[in-house]
Image 1 (cartoon, rainbow, N blue to C red):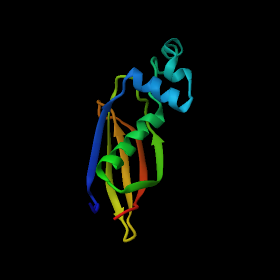
Image 2 (spheres, rainbow, N blue to C red; image 1 turned 135 degrees about the vertical axis):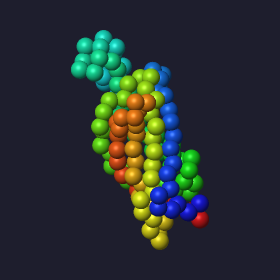
Image 3 (cartoon, helix red, strand yellow; image 1 turned 180 degrees about the vertical axis):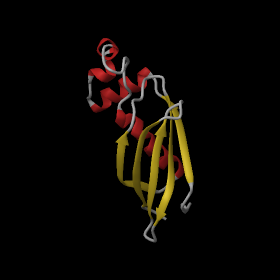
Image 4 (cartoon, rainbow, N blue to C red; image 1 turned 120 degrees about the vertical axis):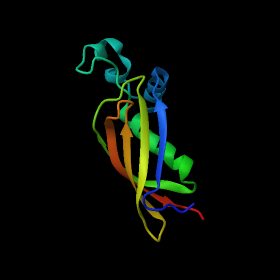
Length: 130
């Protein structure tokens, strides 16, 4: 597959409580924003948050599914809004640049079920094998 400018790919996931607990355990982050119901209820958000990096990992899912043979070079992200347990997030990428050496630039975005942008960024990937 050779990506073309304008190609768009997406993936949707509803984040569960298990997703949050498992991710926190894997990375060793026990922040009360994510795992402490009482703390979160009394916070400015009123409920527990999904880890920002867990949300951002949806871009990696897209790369793995739709860009065989490619790996990440970089990913820049800007978190625009909270993601809560139970939210359905749609991650999408649009190919914005393709070089002769196989490098691809992606405009990345995550939106929640209300259509609100919760994360935006730019990713760069490269094809390692032919």
